[in-house]
Length: 260
View 1 (cartoon, rainbow, N blue to C red):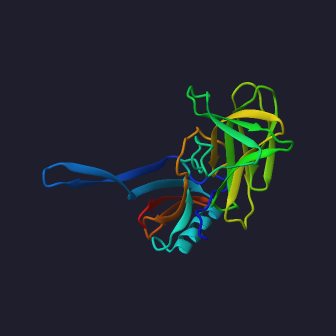
View 2 (cartoon, rainbow, N blue to C red):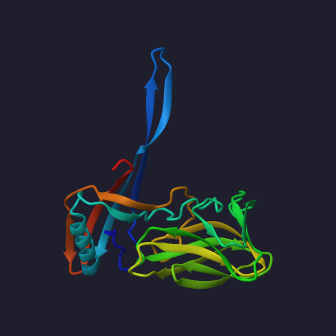
View 3 (cartoon, rainbow, N blue to C red):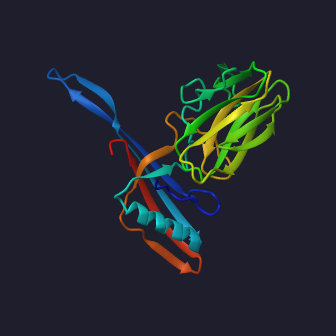
């Protein structure tokens, strides 16, 4: 599996990041002049322009090795959106993409810290810990950051899960953004992310987010998620500017089209 490399910091890109998402509408004009418009999901395209500066020799070598493996525009690769949330349906925790424990209740319509009603209440009626998790097809070797806004009537210890990595965090009666960052199994081609609720307790959750970096950014609600399985390079040439030892710059353009 060819995957786009992270930088030494664990970030996937530097600022500024330019991202364009385009959708296509099919218009059918009838003989009487009436028109019918339909969305065409297969015509959707997403493009990124990633600009790099002050790259180290090792970071540049990783980009060059990746470019050679992709053979320019020829081969597809896995790309994780550096400006997105990797999780799907982050505001619908009862969607089938989420896997709840057998004794975990998941109820929506709870007030959230953004002033809406998009939070969810997780209630564990069992005698042991129960988790809510989502599996995504992404490289296990990446550094990932899992974050979520959490509150509970009484302080409880919830466990944040990234693959086999675990981190305990204490909740309070006020909305608090919890986060956990760790690198996964380098041999894995998928990673599970989730929250574990202790026995006989409940907590409210909002804004579950996973990013391919070491710290959380502003929350972004999702439907499809930010993992692109067959992205392509937009050029066959990687132009590099070197201003000194360990000081390299380049721009990488990436495109993902649903019909490819």
